[in-house]
Image 1 (cartoon, rainbow, N blue to C red):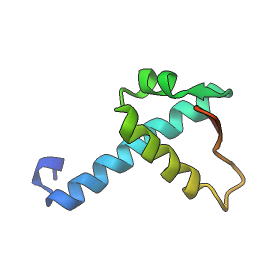
Image 2 (image 1 turned 120 degrees about the vertical axis):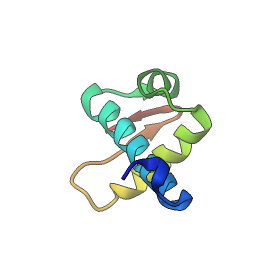
Image 3 (image 1 turned 120 degrees about the horizontal axis):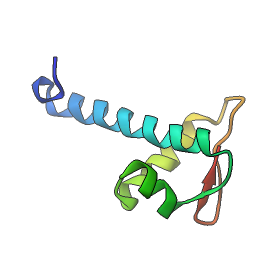
Image 4 (image 1 turned 60 degrees about the vertical axis):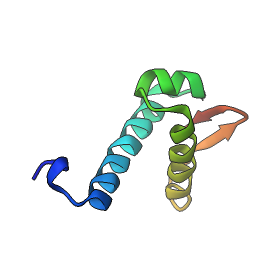
Length: 77
């Protein structure tokens, strides 16, 4: 089933999950703090949406061995 065939809410959830994976991968492979501008460049995600995704990702790692850390406008895993 393509994303176009899913109900709108489900398609939005699938899209958000895909975007979270892109952000997670960028942070994981970098090994250093990345500025929002660098993450936007790597993921091609709108900066406003990116901030929300980063906060969501940080929350999802709260009880994990890995951690998402932000320092000012920079983020690192």
